[in-house]
Image (cartoon, rainbow over all chains, first blue to last red; front, top):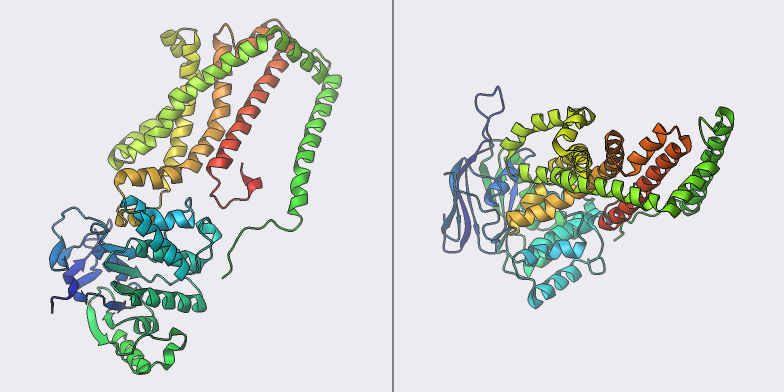
Length: 266
Length: 268
């Protein structure tokens, strides 16, 4: 399964949390989950709510540990279930855009977006130019000095997105990043994301419960089963790029793919 | 793309301008009531405002006001430094060891429940009747107020923000400084809001028990001389001192928590 161009490989991953009091053993959230992501691929994972999608990304980002299995990054073993110390973000190589924007409420938009660069000691002229460019592309210029609570939901989502893009990790995990916004804003955010991805160099693992979104964005869709989650189907998305997300249902082949994925999930 | 900026409700500006007017009106009403009460009860039971103001003026000129205020204020400030800062700091340290926190919390709760006034004889025995006793007395009160507010702040830290910062390459020290500190700050201000007046009144009560200067000593002394004007004047001076400290705290708080989505009028 692994080829020289494999960026991330997940092998036999399983997870269960420690049992609650009165419980003999906690149920498995993930069971024998394996997949790989190629360099510069846009991979989408779709599965029902509560399937353990966030848990999976937490484990890949090393925010949480695995119970079983291994994860390889560019062929190098970076995580096992042996209880070794986790390194969240794997030295800033794995970016993570979470469901909530998680902006620091006491920092302005600009401070929030530039914080990772500052933490990594990379807030130089190049870093600044990069941030300014990202702010412009996402229509956030002019709002640099606003606090998160003064911004709309869509703006906060875009801020969270470019906060991660600004420090340029080779792979970015996204956990339903566009969940809690209205449909129109969502399409706009998806289009922004694809435009940024088209600039190249980025590998994305995008998790969603929305079949349409998974197909519209991805090169490949992996379907997760109900908990305990495992991969039950994979579909290559042949829809040619760039895609017009305003008319996603008219894209060639969309209907058939949608129907196929829907059947998989049932 | 619209942005959600909190705008004042219609007519709110006019209401805001009316607030100082209302305050003055209430203050005048209070003084009038005070005078009426004094008339009804007799000045030997409750001296009127004019008499009390005259006494305060007299104390100002003689320098007694400055001396006693400074003594009381100094005791309260030293007590805050000793007890308040350790109380505020302790939750940040206990955060590093949840086990130690669980072990210590009931003991601290017991300490909080202990009536400090009942310990006053012990404090006098240990620290004498000088300034030290008052400082320790104040510290023993404000320590718990700052500790419990600080603890509430530490416990309300959002773990998602911590994960996000870790993924972006933040050290544990930076996470403490950025997330824990900024989350706890409003709680510490709430703590100060309660602890500072309590520190001043603690110093005053401490001086009731044993002292040779300070506002509490003055009140106690006038009481023993049956000088009701002096007692009321002392109480008024303490109240004004508390209000001044409060106003200062509010200014610092407004500047330091400017990011919060709270209307300016609500910054209590």
